[in-house]
Image (cartoon, rainbow, N blue to C red; front, top):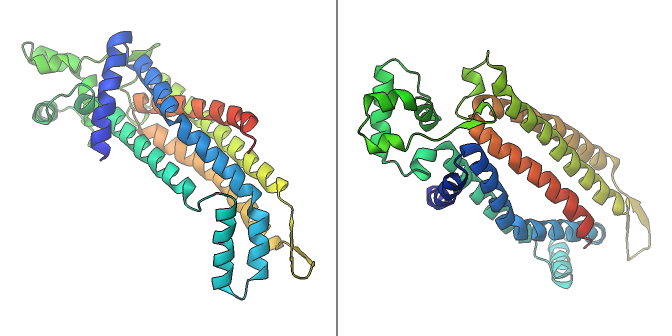
Length: 293
């Protein structure tokens, strides 16, 4: 399934590349278009999150009131969802679709020769074998990126091969070689520009997400009213502490993961992640102001 969508998106990326004649600019335009395609899903997800946050107090009341009757509690919760015109699984479908598309795009950017240039697999394997026989290091994770980097060598060996011409993707983007992998070019300071910007954008994105979660939690009352007795029940302090500790851990773990990924990924893939992060930040800031319910 991922390969199907990657192949489909490949036509779009190739079209953009032919228009701007630069792989980096094509990736930026491609990321913007995909973000616009996903915008309705993002808006729906944001509305669901806000609406879900608002009914949390009612849910806690039901959970406390029927804590000794799980069956009745589940019935009341489902009735609450029906009254609020919400589905407990509404956010899941949106997340699944977004993940499907994002993984397909990962396949595309990781293998541009297969999904963008439509180079036959046999030809790619032959080029890989040829380079390995000549002592070149070809990554098992990003072999096609390495093939593009070695294009000049392949062109000299196969001047009449039309498939070789498809390896001539212009990877230079404002002085940055998008085919390079930081892990393989440690002494080249230019390979750190995009990963560092990506890491910074990841910190900002996570910070915004954390602040939004805290804001939604603060909007909910920190007490639950037992409608049967009118007694005010304070929320468990341990539960709040656990939530805070989890958020704090995530704020540190995700950037650390980002550093690891950006260090071993080609700059072209890191550029896609960077632009996607920037667009996500802009999207969240705008939707947080525009979407009120």
